Image (cartoon, rainbow over all chains, first blue to last red; front, side, top):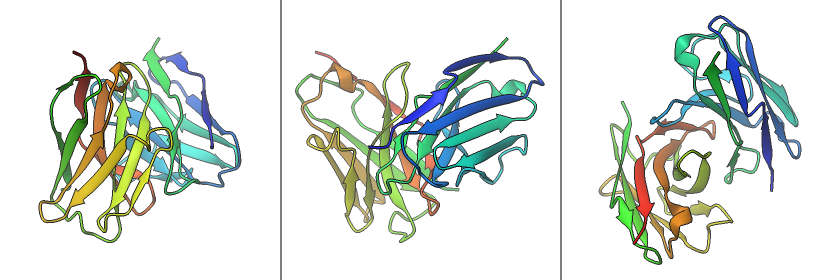
Length: 108
Length: 119
């Protein structure tokens, strides 16, 4: 089974900050990684797929990078609506897949 | 605009079977491009994929839940369903249905429904 870890699990940041979240896979998954944003009481929303491709309608301040076992999600300038929990998801084991444990981004 | 809506009992007794249905509107569940799946999230915890189904009926389940899960599809009603047997308190969660798009990611989600397992 491919396991995903995320770091940090929690981060406190201010509006305008540059934020980076890391997702690591227990084995290589090429670029088969996606990122989701979840706000309290809401379903997750797809942000990025194929490690670095922005989903339609997602603001360009979000970006993704990486391949193999290490991936990052970057928010270039944190906005008030970006305070949420972020999950990575690996799709290398298609049609099976797993999620990372999540990173909560909170207001400093 | 594609929409997914979960429905089913919000309370299930321990040892019984949890049953939920996802109704898809604004698009056909019979499209050859997509899988349809269930994901759950215990209160305050992360996401867990339960399983997926193709319109033809092909299914894939999370190995950790496989012995208790059945996912089925009814193309005539544009619905797919989840059954989880022998539930315990650990199965208390918000259950989401979602579409697995051509990129393999979950691009459309239902709003989620909380199912509590309690006597």
